[in-house]
Length: 275
Figure 1 (tube, helix red, strand yellow):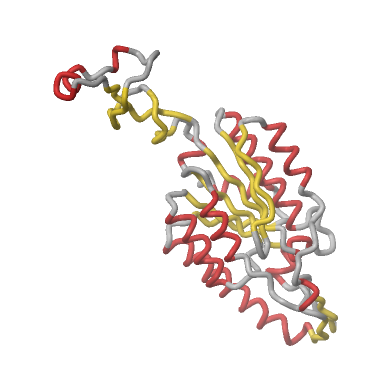
Figure 2: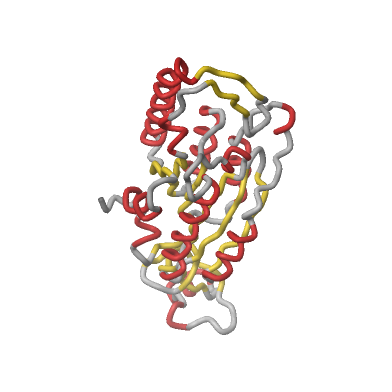
């Protein structure tokens, strides 16, 4: 993630700078210092040298807006969605203070919104505030699991240039489809990071009475006895997290675990390797 935090970045956008990249035909107004006179002698035409230049880059913040992100257990100040917004706002500060640009996307079963990259922090916050009401997702009333994978493929095809892509999601989707979508972003030349947003109750399962569980994405209701379900659930969650971390590590995707009962700066420091 050096891109977001260390300043200048090499871009393949054309400009006049240090390293030679290509030629193009001379046009009126071009600086004569960059005319290649040897090429003129050989081809009897004026050509100007082009160079790679140091320029700003883009950081794309991608927020999962599927209904499960609305979950907030008793005593928690933030839902998973609210916590994701806080982290995205923090990265917006980091990026725009470096005079770099930050763009946004929201997704669920499809790519729902794209916001062009901006170097204005106020524009970034305006977008985040505008996405606060979580929209209903088509399919949630039919008992279908939200599949994030296709939306990541659409996003990967639509990003205009290479940069940093940070994803904020609870990852409650088909694991293989999610992995393929993240890999598509990675293979597009982006530096990819995943913030795994988790409510503490989802990890600890602190229940010991009979429960009526209701799925947030149309799975319906189910009565369970929490006393015998707890150990199995916690083991399954640990395995799920381990598999997710391994997938990210195998594909050089940065993984960050973000629990909503911890201060956002804890998740940021951990993700940036400063602890």
